[in-house]
Image 1 (cartoon, rainbow, N blue to C red):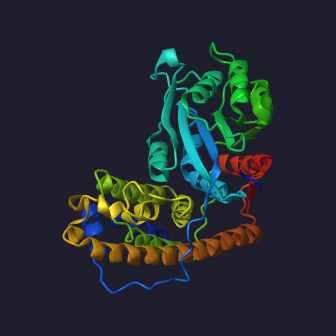
Image 2: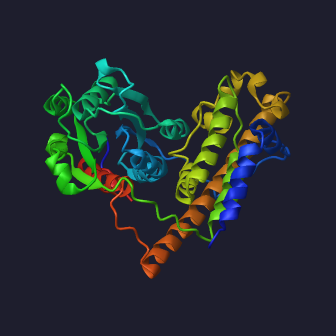
Length: 402
């Protein structure tokens, strides 16, 4: 039970160019060349995974993708990592809650009219690479924004956890009148209450206009909150002396992954691709993603990475198809491969701890820059409002967010 400095623009451009044109598989193979000395029996730098709680944090993100919502989508792409990071700090008496995030779009008129122009982009998942990929695939078109419909659909399609101690929450963002569509919001509200799901409404625009357009009505559904944001607010993307270091560490971190299985190459390539896309988007998105990858409790790829998989299944080598491994590892014995996995695991833990340290210094630098130069953006954004809600609402489930 759950209780309770400057890095230059040219560097980033060079990094992106290198990442874009370097063949992924060659990159993988070169990084997997290893010596076979015996690993240390114990590494004091290694931070073991914490015990998982029986409770969960499940969040469904419902985004308006009508023509006026380009800014909202850009914010979601960039600020996903902060939301995940905040959730990842939650602690329970019996361990850490599993985090699952789902994604819906609404307001696109070329979606199925019978479904109220609502489309599930991703069911609940803990795969952050796939989730980020889905966000980058969103585009605006249309629309007819049926808020009650998308909330109701997400409540009925998703596999919401039955544990009353799990923090289950919906964040719906958009503009236009909240009462559009045939399905009235009260139906969705009743369903949310039955399932114990908190519904939060986030209006993109002036707060008073949001109230006029009824976005505050559902704020009380499931004891949720109503707020507004400037969806066109630009991210204050401050360069820091730590950006290039994080890039270097991230490249080293990627070198600790050993793909396997039918989806191994696909998984590794997706990880690589999302590094590139987030880095291209902004320094904030790139750095936020790297920081998230440093948390073994948040970022795990047991489905395609042998290092993570071994932590979950000690006997995985007994059923491993060696033909699905990188070329350099296919002829290794199980004993040799076990040594390599242990080495990579130890190396990864060290790199992750370095990333955590550098990321903390980066955040402190940014905070100081904003204070000294009055650069702080006072606009409410998806990031700032969602973080506030999570921190406040998680307390209801006796979860501590450090």
